[in-house]
Length: 512
Image 1 (cartoon, helix red, strand yellow):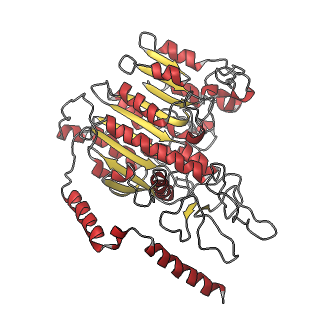
Image 2: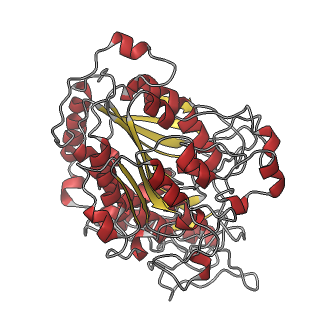
Image 3: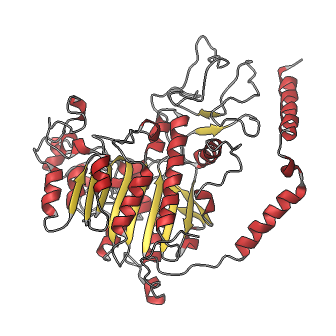
């Protein structure tokens, strides 16, 4: 029997077995027809919300492409002992869906710095640059001056709103940095990372810009070591040399931040007990840095030392929402991307599930009538969801349909990355390998130390005032302008001239 015939027979058998294992109710056409009618009616009953957005709640899943989105949905259901495919994530409930084109000015496939500048500052730019237009050249300081662009966080602050950033990476990382910094290199975290020639030309590091450029009310993430003088022992890891302060200029930016907030209730914390003790009702400013660098993956997090993204999101909202003029908050699930770079789908999907739970908390604490909530990715990763796995099979498992080399393969694989393993012309035999653990690295087609990004469009999900502006396919730089128009911040104030602000209601209620 030829290999092609065998594959065809196995495929047919798979489809038959899959149908036999389906739930009885799904075998009844009425099940699907009734479901479709209910969905249709909910869409027909939907009315446009044309209010002015008092608040903008922006959730950014770094590296959360469509494949990651779908696979995480299945995992979330399977973690709840369901088959998973039919699970409804919080993200799935957003009624307005669009796509964003992610290319940068100089590359087909972007990085997180160029994309963050696009969706936060409304201008596409070059790879590795933050808060500057495309006239800024990667690493060339003299091209920075005069090419700076500001973000919607600053526009919101200038309009009198409170603003904040929450991330699972260091707060100086590309995504949060684009809200406040201007740098022709995303890697200039502290002054120790800035070349002497660039310093002479007037370029400054990202950490120093964090406390200087914009008055940010809430700053939550990691990145302690970029804020303190070289050799400063970390409070959590005093014996770890790599966790010590990096700054060559001797500045302690944490203390400088505290001095700048003299006269206000400003709290700096680095552990969960102190974080939990922060009273949102009496706190004006909060800086919470839980790790020297990026935060730990959710699956590795020590819950006694570091809060979850759900907890940090809630604390940020409760502090910011006291402002009667509203707030802008960026919440980044930043380690989705970093897990993908490592080829660890298990970690990436668990990070995405935690991110989805944080979105649910955000909706719970705000009112849809007055809060524009957006969820999107900055870029995707070369993760494939392949084979013919049975309904309900573990998303981290193996396809029952083996390849023509008579070896199994996982349902999730990467186009490139550290998982490339070919020995003597053969793939590894996975028959006795557990692929469902957090340390498993998925196989990849091309060898790289770190998985690259991929270039397909990413989903943009929206609900709340003017959320319908995000429907359709747009340049990624459009997103910032749509948010600004909805909230009447920035240069385009036509919407607030046409529409009254929604009635102020400080009570908390679950979003419908």
